[in-house]
Every structure is written in C-alpha cells, then in structure tokens.
Image (cartoon, rainbow, N blue to C red; front, side, top):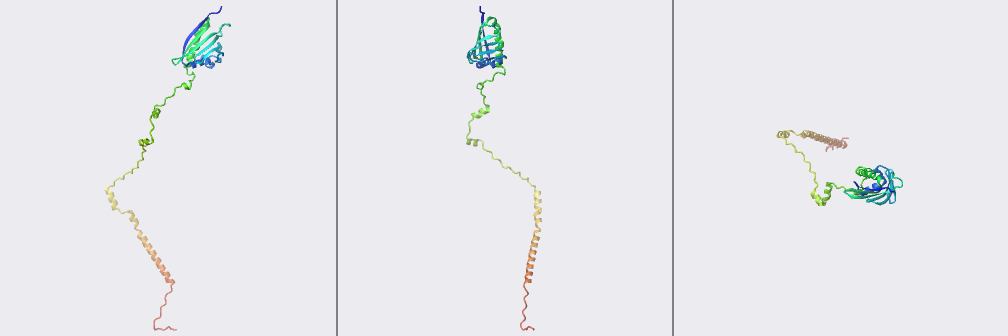
Length: 250
C-alpha cells in the first residue's frame, strides 16, 4: 500500500523584482547566500541541483525566467523508493515587489507539517531578509532613476541666450576713473606776504656772476697785451731818417 501524499500551498511577498527572485532560486551562488547553506546545479531544463547542504536534490523540469520554476523535489530523510515530490513556483509583480505562489504536491503526508513550517523558516523569511538588507544585489544601471539637474542649472538652461549686441548693451565695460589729486591747502595771507617780502635765495646765489665776467674780461685783455708784445718783438724798430741839410759824418 502506497503512503498517503499531501499538497502544501503557500503565498509570500518578496521585496524584489520577479527576475531577482527567480535568479535567487536557480543561481547556486545566490541560493547559497540567502539560505546560508551549500547549493549547486545548472539552471537548465533537465539539469540537476542540490540545496541546503544536499538535504534537497532534484531536477529542473520547467523554467520561464522571471515567471515560473518547476522542479522535482526529494528530501534526504525520505525512505529509499519514495517518489519525488513536485515543486512549482509562480512569480508575479505586485506593489513594487514579487508575489510568490508555491504549490508543493506529492509530499508524503507524515512530512507535510514539518515541510510547511520549513518553507517559512528556511526560505521565505531568509529571502525577505536577504533582499531587505544592505547586502542585496545592486540594481542594474538602467533601473536607477536619472538625477535631476540642480535648480540653478535648470534656470540657466531655460534662459534664452542673448546676442552679442544685447550683451554689450546689457553689461557695458566700466572704464577706470582717473585718480583725483588732493587739492592744495589754502595758504594764509601772513605766509604769502612773508614770502613776497623775503628775498629769493636764487638772487643771492647769482651775485658772483659779474665777478666771473670781470675775470674773463681781464683774461682777454691780458691775452691782447701779450699778442701786442709779441708783435713788437718780432718787428725791428724803424730807423729815423736824417734831417735835411745835414751831411753824414765819415
């Protein structure tokens, strides 16, 4: 007589996109990360897999990325000869996350209660924690919202560009103002009168000029006298003619 079987149905909400939840189940590295236990396998139809440190094993029967996963599912504690159960996971986008619907059929009746609690404790709660924690995968660049420009930059882009003529009229170059010299202080009348009465220093220094002229005149006179003496020495004195009526004595 065959053992009685049972079917487990559960629904869980996962705070991640359906594609991310799908990868967490079929990718052995991500599966091991959120279950914190060993996992292996090839995510292709007909590929074998293991999970929870070889406690679970089976084969991929149907795979629709981001939508559906169907596996044969066998627990290591089940007696030899027990037919494998069937696990079907359906993923739907809901409220910015994923609604996961699980149907685990052909489960031995005596293990149904423990398995129902095991799905909550070892899969749904850790999976929610995995995607809610800071170690969840970084979203793709296409999913990140574009940064809005700063208000100042948006205003600068919205304003029309002014022509060169308008720029010159709008903002003429300011010429530097000439430096103003300080005005001389007003002199008192007493000081101005004292300056008028006082003899200028330049006249006192100019007195010796006539003496210099006199020296030059005396030098020129001495030069003419020397020149006259030279002439008188060079020319012999003229002999006096004898007087008329007198004979020369022999």
